[in-house]
Length: 185
Image (cartoon, rainbow, N blue to C red; front, side, top):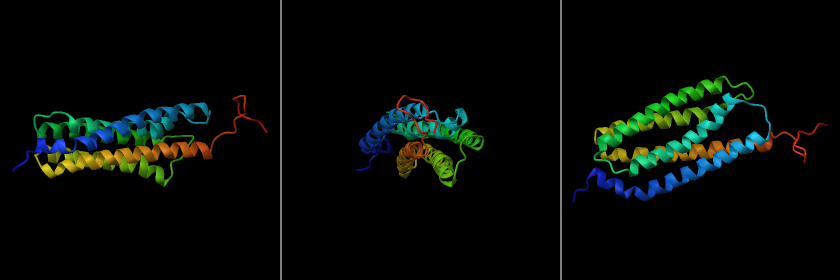
């Protein structure tokens, strides 16, 4: 019995439901993290947020989008591959924009770990998704695994970066008085 490529996608349904639901829930939690960050009155601005806050939401949304694409009723793999490739190319362009914001941040200097988790790994994920999309476009059935790996990669990157933000705030938080203002010693 030969199973078509589109029938193989059904075997991935539960996997993508889990990844998509996790990405959606964690996207909402990232909004809470940003709200908490706004309450701390830490120095920083839109460039820091564009370099280290927004990319985390984008990573979660990329995982959610991959899950949505992989569970949509496509007429064939070439259409799915084309869609994944186009979105991945947009992701690569976005990664270049994040690089610009990270390099121009004024109140925070990224360390090696930041460059890896906020720039290198997402860029690699989008590049892998471009390759996977092209292979699906060429109806390479084994390439169905690539979006799965990339979706998980974006989920893990988002979790790491959200945790990184929260722990940074805990360690480097300003001393807040019970009345809500910054204490002066």
